[in-house]
Length: 317
Image (cartoon, rainbow, N blue to C red; front, side):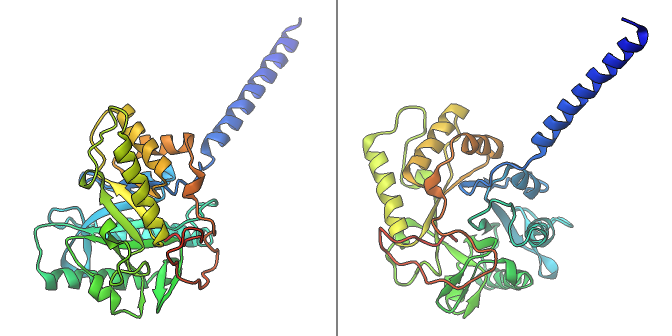
């Protein structure tokens, strides 16, 4: 073979290899599935918790905040650090992404992203905490079109649903608002409560160890499995979603066992610090029952409130 032919063949081979690499790179950049059941817990050391959550496709984030100067809520339980505000690091980029993508964070998003704002810190003065909620309320109203909200007795789902948790009790304040853009976090004790209807407390959030002792190392007992399934079923029939956090610190294998059992029980939201591991598990083991029967609308529309009935589709907020 001549030198010219050899060079030509080599160039063709390089071109083919480059094409394969290019195709592989494009495939690797394709967004993964939107993992509605996956929920990240931000650690105090996380300087900027949102980007990794969005990259992994997780459908929610719990972020600790404390009230600070200038009407801002600062991330973490410590003293206010310049620039580390809820508005700058979470609300603005999260809702800007939804706005740029036509009201969704991902093309296959069918349930709202669940943002839990958890008030933490040593300051437990009611006046300070309620003033802090009013700060949050004003910031949310700046993005009203993209948020799940309650107008009178009508729930309107949006790209993001905001819940308030932690040391501040905002239920009475929320109940007095004709139109609100945040909801209160609940517990299993709220099931059937007239003072905490689903339009006020749409999501039950409890740490695992509050009612369960299984740590994933051994097979779960029949009693605990029955209790878990029964409580989740009761919450769903009451028109509420379920979020479980506070999972035991254990090996990855034990955590996978916990995630699998929660998925089998129909838990809507699994919250964990192990974002990558949880996302990988949910991609490999998707659970169709977690997806709502009624998709999230591209344009907000009014819908009837969910009512306790085992055969009726429930709203997911």
